[in-house]
Length: 230
Image: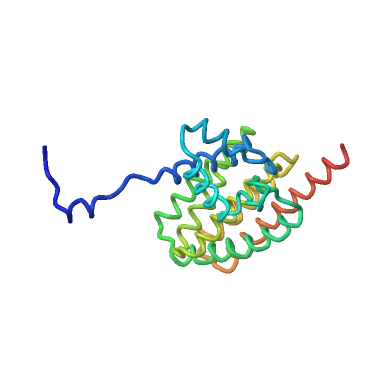
């Protein structure tokens, strides 16, 4: 059996901490709305389901609380965060500003191969819209935005946007389900893609900014329609 020196043992990389794996499992359940907004987190039940003690579970909940996905309430326990209309009104303009900036910086950094990659993703958007495949459109849309964010080369922008997008996933509403929104979103993407392809940083920034605000307006229309039908 091989023997390790003290220094070798100290330098060995530990496997992913248990609480991080638990946090990721809970994160995905929250995004899938298996744990809907407002749900009380039953720590004892979850610990039994995962076959773990409550210590790593509580550490995982602290991670999710730092991301804004759950709320730790003194003497009341932990609850999945609920997103209000005001939250959406606060978040979307911020997202619009940040993603607009990403688009401008992406124009400055993008190489011809990057534009080709974006055009390939945009091609999947076109195909999904043509076939009415909302889920496929949504996935390609997410990939398109993420690629632009990465091309900005600004890790701080990327970090803040990722955190805000996690919170937005808590919303029960999906703007692409609104009649006409998928085509509207596709039209907006076409304009953004054209600005990127022609290296127009200012135009790309404005179009991306307006695209995000257009998404908020669509959610507001969905909310109003649901309230009227209730």
